[in-house]
Amino acid sequence: MPDETTINKFQHLLEAHQLGEQLFSRIDAYLAAHGMTANRETIVDATIIAASSSTKEGLIYSLLLMCYEQGSTEREAPPMQQQTFAEVTFEQYRKPTRREQFLDAMNRIVPWAELVAVIEPVYPKADGPGRPPVGIERMLRLHCLQQWFNLSDPSVEEALYDSRAMRQFVGIDLGREPVPDETTICKFRHLLETHQLGQQLFARIGAYLTKQGLQVSRGTIVDATIISAPSSTKNRAKERDPEMHQTKKGNQWYFGMKAHIGVDSQTKLIHSVAATAANVHDSQVLPKLLHGQETRVWGDAAYSGQRTVIRQHAPKAKLLHSHESPSASTTE
Image (tube, rainbow, N blue to C red):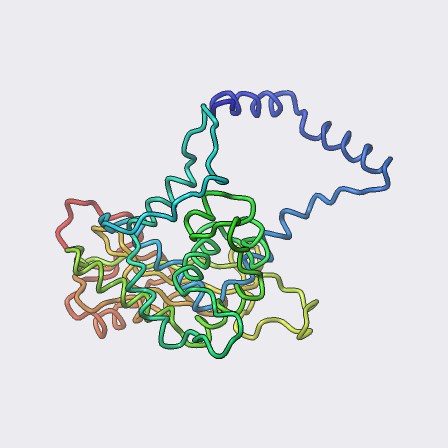
């Protein structure tokens, strides 16, 4: 297979000679001659639909998993499912992809047994002679793939059929069983949301990080990010999601939710997360982003004038600083 440099050079060649539009026009003409039309917005629409699946708990869940990628120490974990003879390839020049390396790291880092224990009390049990439910860890791993790669329910089902690395991470052997369908995936996601398990998982992760010797320091960086979602009412309920609202940032209007994040200034670990409608001002969520032991707090202009709030929730904290990355040598 051509290496990354060769692929890059070819891409730059197309860009330098502006061949993209010419190729697309040629494809359009060919498809039109065969009675088909190409929709340039298909990929964009798929991305937006995937983003619309982010709810409060889903958002919190995807953000808390970032803690492991950034700061957790690796630990011994059960290996991914062994490949069957049918899955083994004999490709001489094959090498691990970035996706495979990332999934292998997540397999080692995430304490799956501890997270499964949080979900187990509310997970359906086998009842009667019918088909038993899919294993909790398998569904949790599948749910993580959705968050990490921004995949909707049908998209993650297709991705598992297409990607051997993803199947190996989840533990699926197509020679013995199919991939869980999109209905099963949707029900699991709704189970997490209904029982508000995002916060419980976040607390379990915090305890795990503390056990590994990763302590939260006395400096916190606060910020908020808008998560856009489709504003259309063309859905089953014929209405917009009541938890989402519109807001204006600069000259641009957005519809969706807002993620508020508190990050440790030394380890860069996320220690607090809150999700609100997009029209909620950043400063209103500030108390939820402080752990109370800070001596300094960093934030942008949206948090100005919050001296009283900071003193109430973090009495030892100094005045709110303008938003700039604190130096690693700064005493907190």
